[in-house]
Image 1 (cartoon, rainbow, N blue to C red):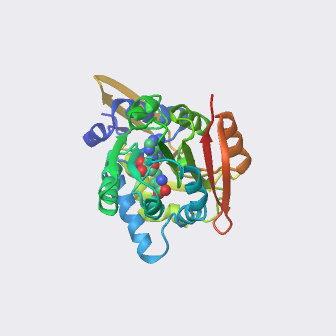
Image 2 (cartoon, rainbow, N blue to C red; image 1 turned 90 degrees about the vertical axis):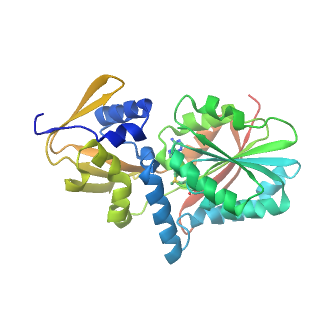
Image 3 (cartoon, rainbow, N blue to C red; image 1 turned 120 degrees about the horizontal axis):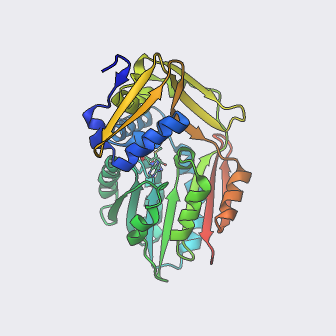
Length: 329
Ligand SMILES: C[S@@+](CC[C@H](N)C(=O)[O-])C[C@H]1O[C@@H](n2cnc3c(N)ncnc32)[C@H](O)[C@@H]1O
């Protein structure tokens, strides 16, 4: 094997399904990127949860702005669903579910929450959510759906979780950094619209601005959380120079590694061999967050044929929360 040739470690093929490996190869070739959404799988779920809980010991919850915006909008949300007998919560990319703990506690005092459905690309993250939800809310039925909301399978996979009757409402949550991790916002909102019944609600939140501070992304704990797939593939992220920054329009905050030498990566799966070449000096994006402006968000909501019911912002940590309703087609 030539000295610049590497092969992913065997665990790589255990953690990622064939279509995910295809996506990683395509992203590496076409975009010079390993999609950040995959970092929450396997060990990534455990380290994310641990670092989240470590942060809560020292300061506020990392997603305090989401908790605050849900609290601020609680009465309004309750008013919209007050007439329904039962509520099904569908939390898309729920992480460890901490960001909704307070909201569900509040809601369960005034409404009948029948089920909580966790929908996540990471099975391991679903296990963490299940452990928490069962402990906090033993009377609420927990369901977990392992799927990538960017895939075309999303609607078929999730369909059985959606209750369709006049007495119940499905409350879709898409909170925290979710929309900033996923690429195709309008397609995702369009998929939500397709799966929502008339009167169902979608609550989503995202950043409005990025700071010029990169310390957090570059801390060694965070770097380990998003570089482990590159290590598994064999491109030795820890030996590479790390470049963190913001695009000129300030819409994307990123962290990239600069290849310290040429690499020929040999993927072997489903009886096929696939080669990806990276040259010395080329950069590979490992972490990326996409900002949403309010006009962009409103346009995406409009195009997706969802009806905006409420928009609120957190002025201290620029963050937006919107509540949308499904309209007739
Ligand atoms: C930042 S974390 C948690 C966000 C959570 N909603 C919160 O407010 O704390 C993002 C979560 O979304 C999941 N995720 C990211 N991209 C996804 C995708 N395309 N499909 C499904 N889940 C995804 C990750 O596995 C992770 O659990």
